[in-house]
Amino acid sequence: MADPKIPLSARIAAAVPYVLPVIGGAGGMLWVNMHRMEFLSPVFWIPLGVFIGWLASRVILALMSRRW
Image 1: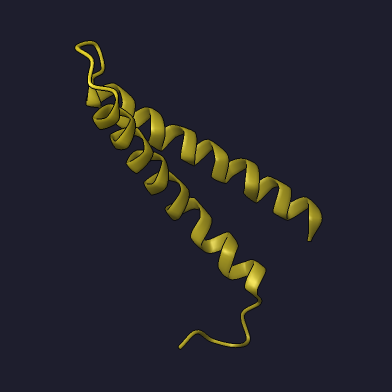
Image 2: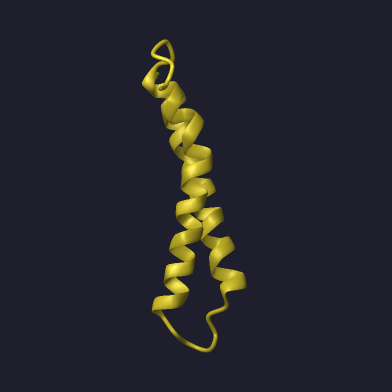
């Protein structure tokens, strides 16, 4: 079980940089699989999704550090 001494905001801040890029990569994979066209390359869309997820995590962490 999780350590009750660690606040929820700290646990979220620790998980966000790992979770959002994975979700972004999965979103890129879903985009490629749902839009079957010749010019959609998984080599482009999956890393783009990972980058967008990473960028979103940086924004969320910046907003969390300002608020708390």
